[in-house]
Image 1 (cartoon, rainbow, N blue to C red):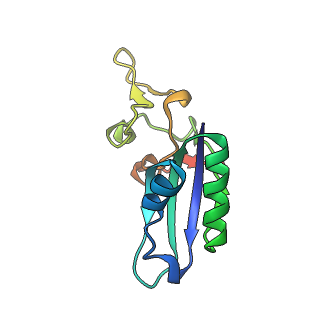
Image 2 (cartoon, rainbow, N blue to C red; image 1 turned 180 degrees about the vertical axis):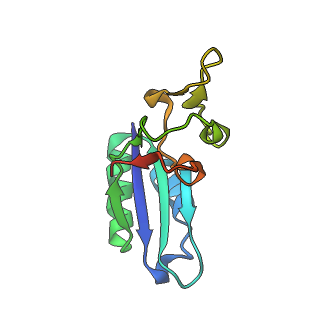
Length: 134
C-alpha cells in the first residue's frame, strides 16, 4: 500500500535518521518527494510511504511518538486554463511527465494519474497558473 504524507520535524528531531528507521524497523520504503531540512529549524519532508498496511500504521505511530507531525496529503495540482499561456516551462521540471505539450497544437495537457504532487511546476510557472488545492 502507498501513502503520501507530509512530515514536520521539531528542531530537536532534525538529525534523526527517519527514513533509515522506517526501512530497518518497519520494512517501509520512503520515497522522498520534497524536502526542506536545515539544522536548528523546523523541517518538512513530503514522502510516499510504501509497505504493508499494518507496517505503515506502526511506522506512522512511531513517528508521532517521536513528536514528528504526520499529515496526509490529499491535495492535487490545479491548472487555471484561463491564465495558462501554454509556454511549456512546467513540462521541463515535471519528473513524471504529467505535464506535456501536444505536438499538434502546442497546448498544455495534464495527465492527473501521472502526477505525484511534487509541486515543482508551481514556482516554475511565470503567470502563476498552477497551484494546489490543499
